[in-house]
Amino acid sequence: MLHRLTLRVLPRLTLAVTEEHVRKRKRLVMLVPGLVAFAVYRLVKRADPLSDPLFLLLLSGVISAVTALWAYKVGRGTGLSNLRREDGARLLGWLIGWIGFLYGMQLSLMVLALLKILVGYDYLLHPDGPAMMAIIIACTSVARDAFEIGHVRRLQCDGQSVLTFPDGEALRALVREQPGVLASWTSLTGLGGALLAVTVFGLGEAGRMLPVQFLAISLLAGSVALPAYLSGQQRPGGWVAAFGLLSWPELFRFWWWPGLAFAATYYLVLAGAVVFLLRPEHMSGLVHGSIGFLATGIMALYGYYLGYRRALEDRIHQQVPTSLLRCPFVFGILSKSKTAPTGGTVPPVGVVLGGSGRQS
Image (cartoon, rainbow, N blue to C red):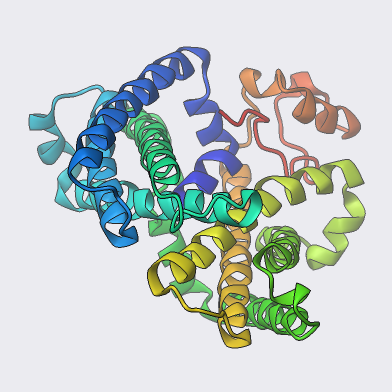
């Protein structure tokens, strides 16, 4: 889900995909695959009750893969015959395989786990309702993201500057450049997540319950993302000094979203994979610890990466677009700095967190 974080945390990408005319087209793009996914569900349901989790995930992945290619084409604004020639097999393979098939399966697992852990609606006991929601929600979410990626690619082909394309290549480059720092953040925070999960597990029957584990790990992983993000910006004094330069409302906004929201999402995906694919009778402390390690480590890794890319974009793109100034959150930050909003320059600390404030 790194592409989703990239599209929402980096302001220039967020502004590009949340302009009003883009949002109107995106709603239509999400509606059509949702209806098609529902029709496919109804057809498949007659032949098979969709009670097999693996079959459900594969079906969701196939539908999402086709949806990703179609939505990307719409966002890209060109025909299928031109995509291979202009974008290349590698980009299209990543789009269909990762944003479509694998991401669709992840979203379906998240839906199934969310229903089981927080609502008590167990897919293994009542497959029809959760299966329908897993397929439709995954399909519409993939359509939304693929359309946005296609729109960003369209802007790139039109000559507009896109410093961070959300295909993960920038993350791989950062891993090659700073392997030690990333390994430290990922491993240390991951061990902290594992230790917390095992500790909670050892508290007794309540600590072994998935809702309790979900709450504990999500809070830790979401909290870890904030200092990792500030550390990735590599400002004088490090992330500790950055805390003193920011107000609590600003820190809370990032901790809440994307920190806590995506930490919960990763936990649900990992827990869903264990519960519905492995289906153990009882989840051991080792299993809970592994989920805690992965969820917390991933959030630290992605947090550091996003902070690094945000600082890089701030240095290269020194002008604040007029559309960004319309956001009350950003305007409030700029009004506290020495630079007036109409001046157009980014203050040295004022946009440490930020974002466009638009989530849809």
